[in-house]
Length: 53
Image: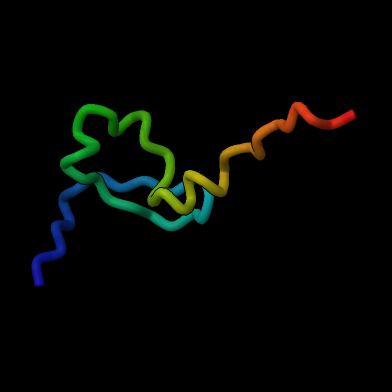
């Protein structure tokens, strides 16, 4: 199995696990903060409800 050890990695801000660079992130690697959609969704603040009295 080819592991590609030369790719840059950084830790996920939500779970803390390291994740590696992906080709789809080539142009936005500096902006990528989360390893997955699940982590990204968990870190978003709850939507404010305007129906509160």
